[in-house]
Image (cartoon, rainbow, N blue to C red; front, side, top):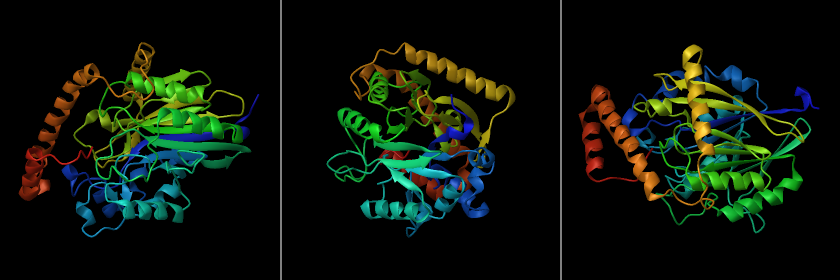
Length: 369
């Protein structure tokens, strides 16, 4: 038996970026921060965050005051770190495909800004013993180890080894090595296919393998939309936590998100629940209520049932051609929604920016969402 006094409340969030997306320049997240302050994105979820012991999220941005930073995609003001710390985000994953977007020096600066406010980055390469350096937090008489890895393609600095890009076997070994030292292991994976409805068979195999190796919780990021949740073995796998603070304003599915409330107690399987949220027009996550909340939870239940029917492939195996072919309609719909968004907001973006967007479509740059 255990009581709430010896149960850790972990609150897990999805992708977080505090810059303006190029298609929301001047009215994205960074613009809202500049007008209303760095705590603005958290205004509607602050009471939930205040109740947690540890909040965890995926930092999908660099942190630096770059010259012309207003035009620097996926580079956010370092001032937001103080707000992250105030709202109990004690651990943030930096193992993703945008933290290196502005180079290794800015990546290291990002780590410095996090450390200055007591926010621990996870996902850094380890030494000879670990492929990822564990971050261990002590809370309520228990120890929790965090690990984080990215499987997303590194578009900007593929030769740099600033964050953990490990093989499944290395991840399993990391989990097995740290498990005897702690009470719980939580593993974050930046994986999957953007906007996909479900995880790939390779993700399912990898997630289950991480639990088999000794982890209690797997937290997925990168697809920008929520996927189903699977209770497996002694743990739980959140295949994708979607976007928590982001400004992909044209994508309704990415605006529907949530927070995972996970209770960790010694010798027990994690207990969990989802607090559904939606991003309002100011890019603030707002808890859903009434029919909207029930609709989100029904969608999540359906997605979770589908996972049981997925036949696992090799752990971490890339999406098959058939899987990507089924995704084509999602990508087409997303591109159409972008066009509508740009036309509706042309008066805010301006003709010059519209011309730049059109030029990038003719000569594609690395993906930014």
